[in-house]
Each structure stands twice: as structure tokens, then as C-alpha cells.
Image (cartoon, rainbow, N blue to C red; front, top):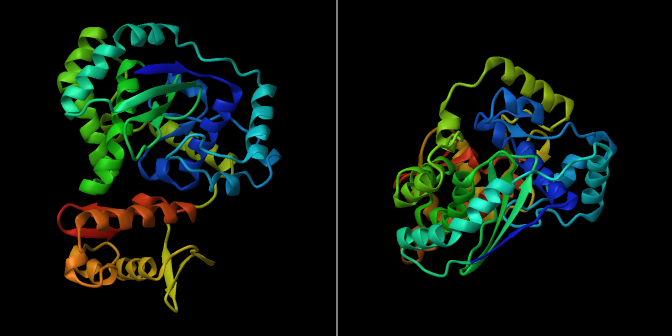
Length: 341
């Protein structure tokens, strides 16, 4: 496995778009993450770092961010958007993150780690190339979602993270597609599995030998721990200053077999997707069984498969995000069905 470490103002701009997309859909807010500028890391290392960006200087910033694809890198192909963000970053003289210590540890141990990951997952040759983009912004780590292997794994890794976060990103990228499609796993279920692999499996035992102490909390620990009330208010004020769109309550309404968010009609939905959303919305808060949903999606019982059902909801969640709604508003209830929160 070949590893490249790549940093530039353009990679930082892409990281900002990635983070802004998750802000615009309300994902961080709905999961209890606090979004704040970098100086607040000294009070809470679990925040999502976002620059005090002059979004008003970038034409229709939030609209452009909404078109980004966070499952692949580059996140945005909008050159005008990226160039304007770079201009903002140049004005604050942004410096390259210092990750020399982590880079040295990874270069010394990546062969061991790669072999241990392959042993645990039961597959070899999964990673063709690993590209790490160190960053000043975002969450601890973010990753692309490859659909075929061997694959290029691409990570945004925040400057204050360690080898545990790096491996967490690699495992997440390797498992994400399979967990969503084969097991229809929720975001929290996926995070729990990866946290266990990084901390308590044989992979975790190896990491403890390489780096006995880590100050980085797992994602599961972060979302379960009580947030500081003062920082929560500061984060709310910061989001208002950035003019992040929406209140993230996402009260959907229906009219003549169409779905609306406020006064805006949701676009790009197929007839089946509208029917399923109507059904979920009519039973909001209650579980709608797989059988009822399958009656809409599949013509007959022979066409039914859990894979096809998971694939349907993967597409539907993606379209919801394109309309400014977090995909996790639809929650999977294992072996039972789905519920609209």
C-alpha cells in the first residue's frame, strides 16, 4: 500500500466544502456536534472546526455547497466556489498543519496495520493507494466511500488527530458501502462497529502497542457525552453568523402526491420514492414495515431482496440531502422496517 500526504489551499477549500455540506443538511446539529472556530479546541477537542468564513463574499455559498458530493473527493468541482474560498484562506495566511510525528509513526507501521486490517476483515489487497489530506478544519477524520476494491482511500485528517483516527478513517472507508447496502446499518451502528475495531479488536491491540496512550475520544463517546452548555450556545451563535440555512426540523408536508419542505417542492424524486416518503410521513414516528414498503418498490415477492431495499433507501437519503435534508431523518429499524423521525 502506497501512502501520499497532500496539503494545499485547494485541499483545505475542499475540506471546508465537505464540512459546510454536513452543516447545511443539519447533520452535525442533529447528532449533537458543536461547530466552532479552531480556537475553541483548547476548551473541547470534540468540536467540528469551521473557519470564521466571510460567506457573504461568496455568491450563493450555501446553495453551491448543497451540490457537493461528500462520498468522493474532490468534494466539489465548482472551480469558482473553490477559488473564492482559497482567496479567503489566503487573506488569513493559513499555514500547513504540522503532522510530522504522525507521518513518521504511520510510515513505520503501515505495513503491520494493513496486514492486521486484512486479517480482521478476511480480505487482502483492499487498498490500492492511501491519500491523506491533513487539514485545519472539520471533524477528526472524513473519508471517501469506494464501491469496488482494490480502491484508492482518501481521508481528510484534522491536524490534532493521531494514528487511531487515521485507522478509523481507513476502516470506515473500507466498510461503509458494505454496511449500508448489505446490512442497512444506521450511522450510529456503523460508528459503533468501527470504534470497536479501532479500540478493542486485534487492530486496537496493535495500535496500543504503537501508541499506548490516545487523548482522542471515539465517535460513540463524543455523541454520548454531555456537551458544555456555554459552547453549545456559542456554536448556535456561530452558525447564525455564518447564515447556515434552515432550522433543521424538516417538517415535511404533502399535496397532490408531492412532497414539500416548507414552500419548496422536493425535486428529483421518482414515483416510488414519493410514494414511500408519503407513507413514511403519514406514519411519522412509527415504524413502517419492510413488507408495506416492499409493496410499493417491488412488483412481486420474487423481486424482493434486502440488498435492493437498502439500495433504494441509499438513493432516497442521497436525494433528501440534495434537497437540504439530512439523510438520517429516515432511520433503519433492524429486521422490522423504517421510521421517519
